[in-house]
Length: 493
Image 1 (cartoon, rainbow, N blue to C red):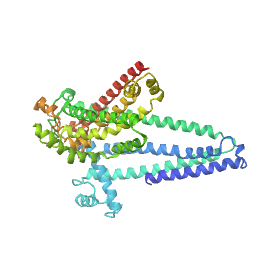
Image 2 (image 1 turned 60 degrees about the vertical axis):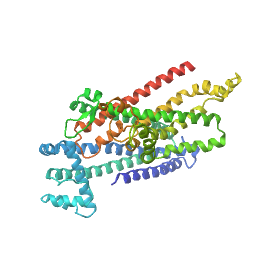
Image 3 (image 1 turned 180 degrees about the vertical axis):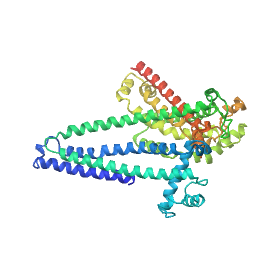
């Protein structure tokens, strides 16, 4: 049974439990709700929660654990010779998954029946042709070990799905039965429901924390594998980025880090002044009618997809920067440049700075403004000496959000600044020239993980080292900003 149908079945049973539990509680009280310990709705919600929550938790845990167990089990049975021919166990398992998916599609499309998919072992070329007809990505002839592993993968996956369906539905029915039996007038449903909601809230916050920890640990482990195969000194201090999957790669991160910081600096140099000045005008000077029109129009920029910004950079901003500035000044002839990506990214970040800063400035109590006016300060002096200092922590938060958004942007950089790393060997002029093409860490993370590459090679694992480094840098910036805000807030208070 598909996962969606399992979820719908559990939710449907939970809704039935809601109404049945509510009516049973009222029935035990003779139809008089005043005889119940709790309101009738609490009995219904108790039945719904006891039916749905445990079943869905088991479903989520099963979906997380079962695929890994199946892959580890099948991977252990693959011959070492096959692994050596493919390069790594992960590549073999990727081929097994593709073959298993193609077998499933072939059966669904009628190209072979369920039994035929297990009887074509002798003629692997015909089987490969049938699998390619399904549209699946099969780049070479299926080998005997891969086919056997794919058959086992399908079998184990089907058994796992069956047992998962049975376990989840049985648990939901058990919760339904227990909840209905407990729904009488003396049952403290309100206390139970509130305790259950508290547990759900704690579980939700725990999941968020564990997800963050899991992300960091996954990057740490893969980064450790990378540094086992590539010297950390060359990664952190290398000035050349030239990956080559045939070996002898230069994987120095400094060119990528410089491109990331340079493009982000240009973007913030555009977004912060424009966004902050716009927020000051809208909150302190603009009338209600103008504000009602201008603020939504600025916020529309935040809803434009980044691919549209990328096309804008490629078609419009890039040629303008090249023809009006770079070429006349003799600094470059390419539409891809740091300036192109930075300008367009800055336009994208304006609503992040403007909207958040506007809300923070409006949150400053009017009594502070009135007190400043009462002491004889002008409007501009009040803004500079009272409003902005009071709103500074929030403004710093808005700038940090914009900076994080700039550091993590990919599409605008690809289409506006290109995919070439900064060339430190070309001299200082090429590195600091804003009209030269450069790329960022995020772009190279995507490029190194794209395609059918050896996941165990340093050229692929470097993506995790880049991601972890970017995470540490962003975390450091946030901690530094937090310290600055706290220090200033203490002085202000």
